[in-house]
Image 1: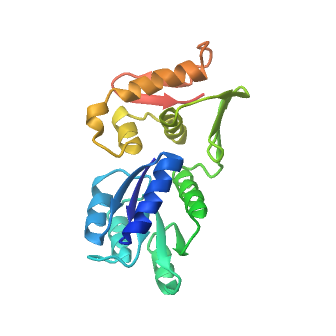
Image 2: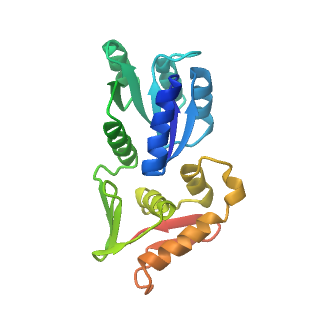
Length: 223
């Protein structure tokens, strides 16, 4: 999943980025001012925006108001100081999805991020079941017919993204945009590698055909 952090406290932003990247293998972009943050939120595909309110250049509420007016529906987690309850109410009223007051526990931050992303894809439950495939996004465990499947971090996140969009065609470009935080055009063949590996691990006997290829369009995970 791809996350944008708009936070001017550089150490806090770095800590959030590090835990999301290293613990959850999320792709993370950082912005330390409101103007740059607004630009990034407009020009890239994100699964979540973590938004501080007191920012140089542009207030977080103005960023939130503008992206909602422009139809950008990315889930937004508001970060704010303890004494700004009126801003929390405004933020939720104009389209924020959740909030945390500083200081906060990083474990809670990660849990809220994952819950917001799941809900944005219509997956309120932390366990996604497609046929005999079961993905526990909290424990990060995958089973097929109750047999554990060992996946690499990127195989896992490719599978989770397809599961979030189950039944829908997901293009290779969309997968790359949501899973990578670097110049993915140089690595455009990795998705085919991960899809091939997932098929072999999930369905080695080729009995279920859960991951389908639509030539020229992308991939679909469905029963």
